[in-house]
Length: 458
Ligand code: GLC
Image 1 (tube, rainbow, N blue to C red):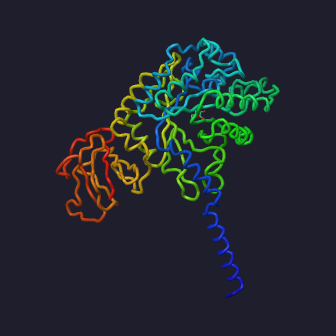
Image 2 (tube, rainbow, N blue to C red):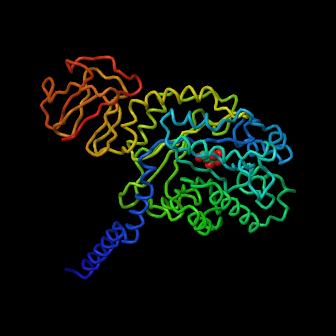
């Protein structure tokens, strides 16, 4: 072999070695990964939660970003704060709504970007309790949801458009206000305040299951927030709490593949569902949760009538679960504290479906089978759930599992007719199911949104 060939060969060999080395996680990574999967076990089982965006912005009724979108000063925004009086707020009613929809956990905004606190913080007067007969809305929320057996979480904005030491960076309402920009912003002072408020939440409100921080951008990410120190403190009071990934901007994807984060436990795709379940660069599924609004806004928006249909919500939930993900579905109560009627109507319908079909959601995840054209699969151990979402002519074809054991309609437990083959098709690994006999005929589906067929794998 010529020298040059030897050299090229060596180079190829070395790069291959480097590449394969990268594909193998270190024992330390595997250990962290396993612990993460253990810690998130209950959450990955539950799959479905309620997000609640509630604050003084409900008075403006143009979404929670109104202060930034309209570049309002704190003085201008004050009219909404003053008028905010959620007299109809009833945490128990909210909790019942969530539970009836089949949701297993809920996350409430304790403070959003506007900085107005829904909890009785000792570190500021900019809080609802001052004008709400001393009532601590966050505490009432936690008590009521826990009483319904739901897990509880708090959303806390690390961004603050009110605090005088928070600079007018990013989407700050005063980003174009030159005078405001001349102020002396004491970042350490803001961090002290922010860490202090988080400490109040994790120390004074009993067991919290989830902490949902929002959000990082540009260099305002990770250690800019002193995120490690913050997390250490959070875990000191709440060793089992789960934390989302927004204390940093998504680091993983930029550096040769997604990894589990040292700053949080789960990823948070917003207003969309990934094409495939999220994996780390070694191919391991990682915990993720899509957060989604029922119309097009998180906070109450009077004119936004773009409500998603209950069917789209059911399909989206199944979509997430079929990819090992969760769905955190938002409601934005109005200024009186009521969840909008339209949201209630959608959630009721979702709840009716969940009453009969939650077995195909809780504890379920992805199946190895490819997505069929009539719907999706979810799976729990050796039980495969065929979500028959779109009407087809005749039966559905379950491909790739060989022979099935018993097959039932999940909603009633009724056994369903199945066959090994149909006209001219004796391919191995196929079998056919219908909701009635003969299986090659077309019948009305029992559930117009998603008829779930429960298949016991042999
Ligand atoms: C975004 C928005 C915010 C909303 C959140 C929900 O980061 O800033 O208004 O609370 O996402 O995921």
